[in-house]
Length: 237
Image 1 (tube, rainbow, N blue to C red):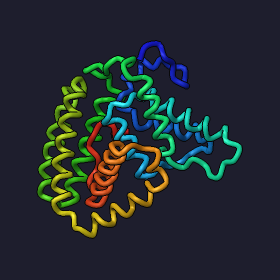
Image 2 (image 1 turned 60 degrees about the vertical axis):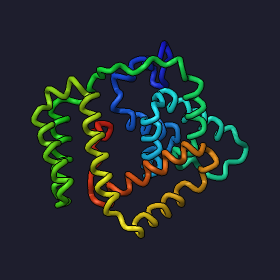
Image 3 (image 1 turned 45 degrees about the horizontal axis):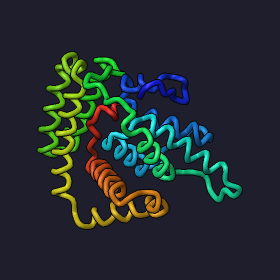
């Protein structure tokens, strides 16, 4: 990201080293920008962060977008309510991403791990254990794969991009199995909940952004429904 500087004073060009801290960096910055101490993000917020991550939106663009949205809010003479969702910042984030487009260096293929080998192994084994607790045949098979990956932690620690691809494929398999067993009523209730969360913010997003966000939200809710964890390394911390 060139010589740009983050609000914390660290060079933005160093952020790929913390690539797998994408979620926590955004969560913590939103909390600081809001200025009210601990504030728990909603399921919609987490789904929105995931759409940004999947779309390749740079961390710096998200940080700048959050700051721009809060600056605009604070400049208003009348403030009806506080900013209670990242969705309020969605338009500003995408504007910053467009400004930065073409000026950001591609993420290195080899990314430095922000966690230790023991932390990675523990994460993989915990997820395997949670999947076994569901007593679902397909998920038990995925648990076995996770246990095999955990047994080779040192090897995978130096090939994180490949490991992330494996975990993404396993999560896709997990979601496909869960969708096949989802009832019409469950899907209806999930979409009803989504609409309640999203109603105020639809005007701040494009149709494509809304489609991506809806998918992420429904996927997250579905996994929670069956008691399955997220497998991506982005959820390690």
